[in-house]
Length: 226
Ligand SMILES: Nc1ncnc2c1ncn2[C@@H]1O[C@H](COP(=O)(O)OP(=O)(O)O)[C@@H](O)[C@H]1O
Ligand SMILES: [Mg+2]
Image 1 (tube, rainbow, N blue to C red):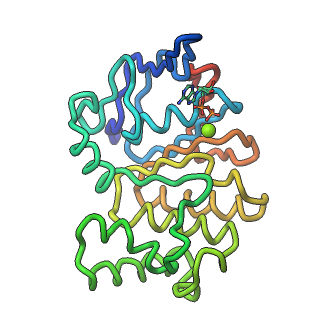
Image 2 (tube, helix red, strand yellow; image 1 turned 135 degrees about the horizontal axis):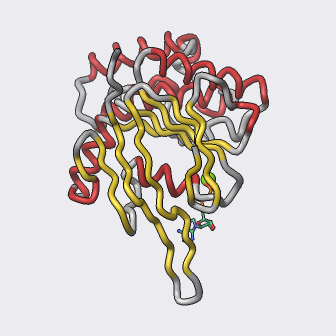
């Protein structure tokens, strides 16, 4: 029997937003282990805390209570630059609205995170070509985002998140802007990425996207239910 390895260990994680008028308990006491190779689908209605939760996992935001341990490192103990490094090398992020640079071509968009990570040009170009083949968009490598469909843009988003071979992909409603046919394509691409070993944590409010390959968690009022 193979023993599952823990990628994320969350204990009593809270993210409360406090203002002079109110306290919003966006994430409210989450205990959870995410294992290497998991495809987690966090399912919950709008406003249930999904984006806040993912931002904590991605190191884009800090918990106001509890601990998030990633690969035996407590994110609370890391400096901002160490967190940046982690995001650059270990964590790939996919957003609902693609976040492509409008003035860069498909190929340049895929190469961009590698440019930031200081990878030499020839290696960048080789890796981008490899990824564009994998997502089936090599023929659009010189096109600009405005010339791509939503589904194509999101495929580029996936390629870009994969450039530095992250251990985990964090995806915030990656199909939220797509019709059902394109949404299914994106989910299939994510499933195939997961089969190759990358852990995926995706949030969605669309029940039709859930499949039995996923470990489905419900998020309601900032609390996780299995
Ligand atoms: N920066 C913020 N300041 C105050 N409240 C926030 C902030 N971001 C999110 N919230 C609140 O936290 C709750 C969860 O939001 P969010 O994580 O965006 O939910 P979801 O992604 O599930 O729609 C909501 O009530 C939202 O209004
Ligand atoms: Mg959200």
